[in-house]
Image (cartoon, rainbow, N blue to C red):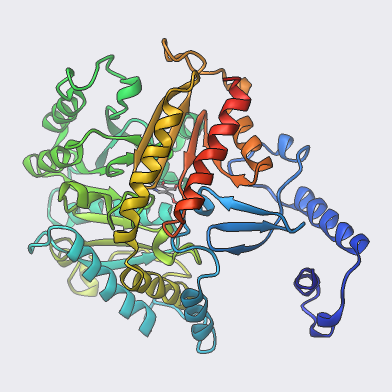
Length: 482
Ligand SMILES: Cc1ncc(COP(=O)(O)O)c(C=O)c1O
């Protein structure tokens, strides 16, 4: 337990100090008290939080998290979908430490540095290797920021300004999907489509056109797949046909609408959307913040349907879950339109204090190298199969409406009535109860409403994957009364 005291004091003299159980308990209590007194947690009803017993994380190792009392948990959601090769991955640890010994941060405004330049090259190479990359469609230019929401803000502003420079001033709105989630900043919320999160802010948001979500289990158009003959895509085309003159870009989460509950689009949906964008002269922004870096079983979700967007948003897994970093990558064709004399005012006026931070770029470089040296994607394929087979057993549960899986992205939708698909009432908090029970059994998972999300680290072992599903199944059974 020594490390705990080093954390509080930062004092080397205490290395040999062995705290008593009383010391330890009072430290734990103090952290809980400070948390409840000073922290406002994200997406959290604080009234309930302050009555609860938080799990206080002290350490991580591989796919596991250790709490302050020494109890280990399987990290079933990769610490909010970011961790890739496990916690405390030696190569990433070392890359960050090595960079700390040089410099932790200098600006990319008016300066540059090796980690940012080397990472930009690596990202472009990886993207071009993964996605069809014929010029002028090839993605060649990297704009850094700090998180998924800013990657999206940048993509929206870039698309908007591109059309202004191209002389098409009418293109000043966007097309996005119902059930979309692109982050929590105001631009990202404007193109979001999850009522629960977004409705409150509607007076603040800019207008966008909407297209139906490919949520076949609860089709908003009242159809059944495949007899619907993809009515949602025909609706998308109708909107594009009618409004293409004012639509700058379609923004889409390729293959999986993550935050809406891991909604997996039918095969071909993305490719058709790309074809429609080409047909109606609309840019495509692919938001791979959640799906990127192997989550769907390929490096990028767009790869499954051989689609190259005009703008690609990356974040979350880019640093292997170590540090905040994002990249918005675009084509030379778009980039070129921003070139001119300073007085032409074509500059992309956007940037953040920590844009292209050295530590984050170094972590990202090490993370990407591990994909190659560790053959991560190849090794994942059998694990994806095993995960699918293990999940098959859950499908028949009385209160499991649908199990959706794409690679290592899984959503288990719980329903009150399987036959009618009637959802539980929000007040039942069924999803939360299942996750709480899973926590008691040593598994950290989070629900999205009543969808239990599983999103393990790509490095998880076969045995750990089995535990992940077994504990989830037990928790569902115990809470829903199978
Ligand atoms: C598809 C997608 N876009 C954007 C974001 C926002 O990312 P961040 O939380 O890093 O701002 C998320 C977060 O879950 C996401 O799933």
